Amino acid sequence: MSEQQLFKVTIDNITIEVPAGTTILNAARQIGGDVTPPAMCYYSKLEGSGGKCRTCLVEVSKGSEKDPRPMPKLIASCRTTVMDGMEVKNITSEKVVDARAGVVEFLLLNHPLDCPICDQAGECHLQDLSYDHGKEGTRYEFERRTFKKHDLGPYIQLHMTRCILCYRCVYTADQLSKERSHGVLDRGDHAQIATFIEKSLDNEFIGNVIDVCPVGALTDKTFRFKNRVWFLKPMDAHRDCPTCSGKVTLWNRGDEVYRVTARKDKWGEVEDWICNTCRFETKNTSDWLLKVHVKLTDILLLHRVITKVLSACTSLPKLLLL
Image (cartoon, rainbow, N blue to C red; front, side, top):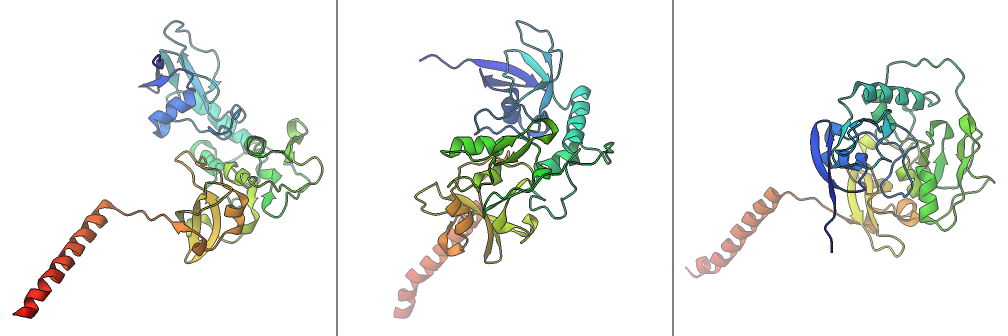
């Protein structure tokens, strides 16, 4: 069996070796920190995602060792694979910083100021992107887009005015369900997420579109306007589910479970897809086994206490005989 070929790539003056076929974005994620470009449409678990939002644009100052010429334009790092000897600039490039600010301004052109009432507030990727790369005001002077409301069923609330057309929800439904009921209708400024004929989304795994949405366009109706995420305590839990892995995150306040989501990694991507039963219909703590995180120091302290108790118990009969 031949060894996997490794390519050396330098991103913001940090060199790393990655397997051939790795995208610039995933190579930057291995480095981590500010070197990693933001991504609003790319999702590693969704085949075909990426290349829509343009927030991950980077500058390639050296193509490779064989062809050191720089690429003439900024490229999407989520769709471009690395070459051996490639040199990439992200936060060290003024072109990238300026372009990213322009992309953020474009994404916010029609986005309403719903943050005070949006259930996604506090965990919204667009909020983070705007804080890091946005501007104080807008130059847009025209009327913003409005859309006819579409009812997607009893579990999912659609706010099309907040949508940035990342296509994540479309790929999720396409790859997790047997039959996709929604998609992107129309083109250009009129493009929207909807069902062609008014229809509810009732597939067993369709609730995952809520987790993959980077903004507040698709939210949980069972959690709607009930609480803020910064008031809730997330706890990993699991149950024996015949449909999915049953590995979730419970969002509690006191003894009440306000919502259930899939567990996510440090990039905000779902680790295991969960079914609608776990997400929407199982909200009692008694239905779940909680995963408690215990520090090593606490275990050692507990071990010392138990040892002292046991030693005291073994010496008690001797004291009684005296």
